[in-house]
Amino acid sequence: MGTRCDTRVAKRYTVFGRVQGVGFRYFADRAARQLGLCGYVRNCQGGSVEAYAIGEPAVLERFKRLLAEGPRSAQVTTVEESEESVSARYTDFVIEGGW
Image 1: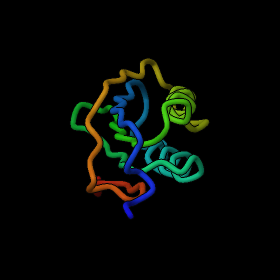
Image 2: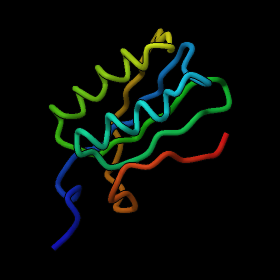
Image 3: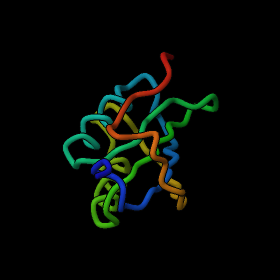
């Protein structure tokens, strides 16, 4: 018997705009956990935020909509989405990186 994320699909989202220093990673983490997703969220060097999520397609679409809204203090301009392979490494959702 595997984890709850064994039969789902994965997507990577790159979120652009004013998304660092505004609690975006914590917002994404809370949203992903409430939706039952596995994966991670982290800040990127260029000022964007990257989220990798594993879940059912309809739930991932809902997560993308939440990322596009962001927390109140964020200003999201674009969310890029790409199909990814499912990684067995993620059995929960985590915030990666410390900066």
